[in-house]
Every structure is written in structure tokens, then in C-alpha cells.
Amino acid sequence: MQKKCRRCGDTFTVRTHEDYCPECEKVMTPPGAGVSKELTCEGCGTTFIHKKEKAQGRWPKYCPECLPKYSKVPKKKEVAVEPVAQTIEEHEVKAIKEDVINHPSHYTRGKIEVIDFIEDQQLPYHLGNVIKYIARAGYKGDKLEDLKKARWYLDRYINEVAQHE
Image (cartoon, rainbow, N blue to C red; front, side, top):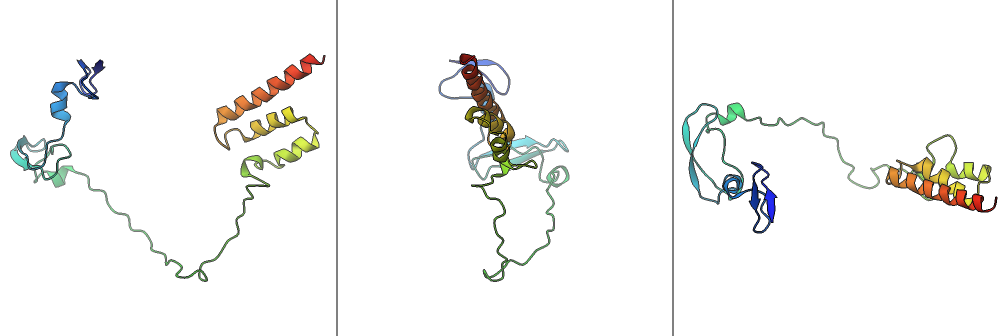
């Protein structure tokens, strides 16, 4: 099977599951542990020897002298430490505000709940589901899926009405 090399873009024959052509594979494969190599520093241009301690990672770009100058060491941010409650009595227990069974948040976003609107308008089953899926689209699950469900119920109701006319 032919495949395009992820590094150079050349096409090569794949033996198993390679991502790189044979030439790029040599460059991209990390050396084994205990291997030494003579490298040229990209910072100052001097030659240095680096020995791999682990069989992973790429060869360094910079010599030990230039490394602190060119590498960016992330600074640790100081965070204010707050004491943690030691016992359950010290910790304030808060009641769960959201009622996921009777009043789920994806149906109670507006001024009235979706079920209250459907019942107030005395909508038939199919139209009630159209309203329900449109109201919750993007707030519970996949938006496109909810809109397709709403369209499915609306099309089904339209066909039912058309048959009786």
C-alpha cells in the first residue's frame, strides 16, 4: 500500500503502519538509551556531545551553556492556599438547586417552562415534541440532532394532517 510521508510528503510503500518514509523514519525515530551523538548548537554554533539517558525524545537543539538562555521555563504562579474543612461538620452542606427530574435546566431557560407552554396551548403529541426539541437544541446533547428530531416530528404531523384533508 502506498502512503504519503507526514514529514516530507513523498509517497512510499508501507510495510506495516509507518507514518514516515524510510529516510524520515531515521530522523523521526528517537534513539535508544545510552546512545551518544555529536551535535552542533543552534544558539552558539559550538559542537557538543549529548548522551541519551532514556530511549525517548529528540536530540537537543542547544548546548548546556545555551539551554538556559533559549529555553522557556514556565513560572509557577503563587496560589492563595485556603484551609480545607477537616470534618463534615465544618463543611457547609448545600442543597442541590437543580431538579433534573421535574425541572431540567435545558427546558427552563426562558420565563416559562416548555412543558407549561405545551400544556397551555393544548398541543398534540407531535407538535409538543417539535417545541420541546427546538427549545432544548444546543442545551442538551447535539444541537443538529435535536433540530432533526423536531423536523421529523413536524413532517410526521404534516403528513397526518394532509391525509385527513
